Image 1 (cartoon, rainbow, N blue to C red):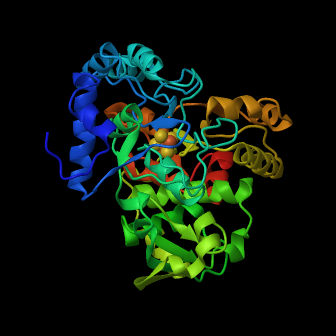
Image 2 (image 1 turned 180 degrees about the vertical axis):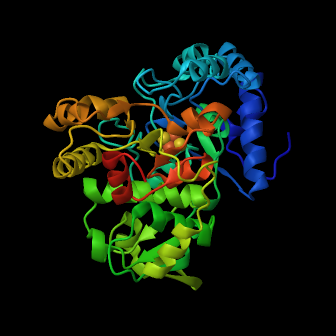
Image 3 (image 1 turned 60 degrees about the horizontal axis):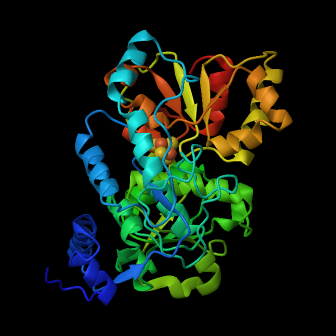
Length: 427
Ligand code: F3S
């Protein structure tokens, strides 16, 4: 195959089939992908671990299973071990007979797909989470490392908070990058592509709700890179567990309500600390966010419940998966509010989702026992995969996740509103 891209002799040999037909097809796909985006060369994937977005054994994804079988037969396994997005099912999460039946049919390939993932390079059985970059999970790329990931919330976090370099790839393409050990050099891998074309000027009177701020930014800048000013007034200049959790949730909203793959926060994120305003392109546009703008964005979310006044049947908190500090803080807030209301348990079935390693760490804290006593369920699932079917889609479910709101029928509420609803039992 003749390429516009300049390949190294090793990459060219792979493309020519010297490592087998399957590897040649993997390389050809990466070359075509890169050329579509104007890439002139490939660069090595330098992170220790990969991360895959396709974690669910949906029965209709037959071509994916056949493809992976062919790759495995040909010995074209991932060159790096990887984590993967959360599992779609967990018996801890309430579901009725019909829903269970539907899940069994929908995700009938879950077991066999997980076997394929293990053979392909899955780190271990507990490696299913979108927050692979948290300490307890340990897939934490370093600044400047090149990744081949696709999960939008993880890509935006790795780029922005860790300073790693990754494009918003699609599922399977990211696996191909991990198999071939290289990715096309364009977009967010380049210095130029990491420059900001928007200045977001935060002029609110109080700390913006992370999920609404991210949503506002995403809707405005779409796939561009924003440089956010004025946020450290509220969240400080230290990248600690609290600020990282804030940026995780804000970033996931920018990536799902828009298509942001990288943001810089003045005085906080690594490249902004290093380069400051040199990161801003001269013709950058300005977006001012004040209290009224956040209110406007919030009011624009449609409620697609049949009965907008229905009592919620479920509440999901943890999309992206919660961090340890978030689990502890939610427990403390719930305990305080229930005490004030003279109640012992939440009144709406509430599920906190987090990775297994984070949940294991949480189970060793005093907060864990308090949370269980208050009736909250913990789970490792992806709530989106629970919700995305006609049976669950009909239920009135609330969430504090703007990503979940965007992709499902869940209704969004701020953290404070959620606290009131689940403790009092209604809206
Ligand atoms: Fe994670 Fe699933 Fe939400 S992958 S970001 S919990 S949609």
